[in-house]
Image 1 (spheres, helix red, strand yellow):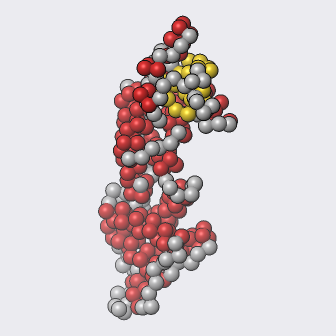
Image 2: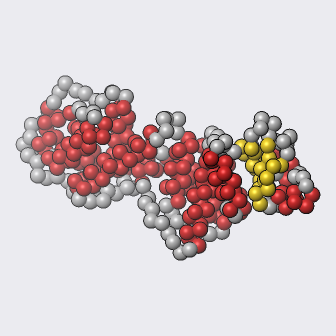
Image 3: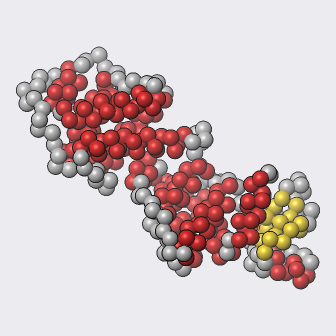
Length: 302
């Protein structure tokens, strides 16, 4: 999103006044460009022109049905909220070291405006902490938390803590170089594996523990190996048999994950992948005081 110093007033002139702070102009390529600045619309009404020096932000609207939605959003949203979001997006671009594209600012303005409207009505939409996000996408999560804090400070009000989660998802949509939806699909599958483990152990996992972080990363890499057809393999089955008999509960959970992966992807996990899942699940159980003592103590050690 270029600032005022990056562009002069488009040669096509101002075409539409959205409100006192936002106008639409046509640039040299015939594209609709939003010009934003406090009072520039008020100035236009009274003087018939916009001073380029007073344009604080400018960005190009996408063509098609999104244009009408964007114009309505920028007309309805309080300018203080728009400024707060644009400032936070600028900071996120610096934090992540990349351009986040044209769609992100409007998506975040839309989201935050909706949240604020609901809070003003005494309605808080239930959210979730999604701790897996902090492990799988640490850079985006940190940038999103900073965005949420910046927006809250600019607006002088408290936002729900789960806003960091929602903003992380917005950033992921804007920053992933993978095919559309890949990051979200991977995240959902990791979540499903976590729920399978929690159900099998009968506990809620400690999301702040190092063992949890290691487990999440292991599942992520497992799923990526699956996509790349590079699953772990070994010609030695002795340790697999040992783990199967020594940790039957963890092994059963790992087999449950294997069943889910087969149903979700059509691919079968190798014994080596199931073995490492078993070890990670047992490590999680032990860290929470739920070690499996039901296995055969005399199982053969490889």
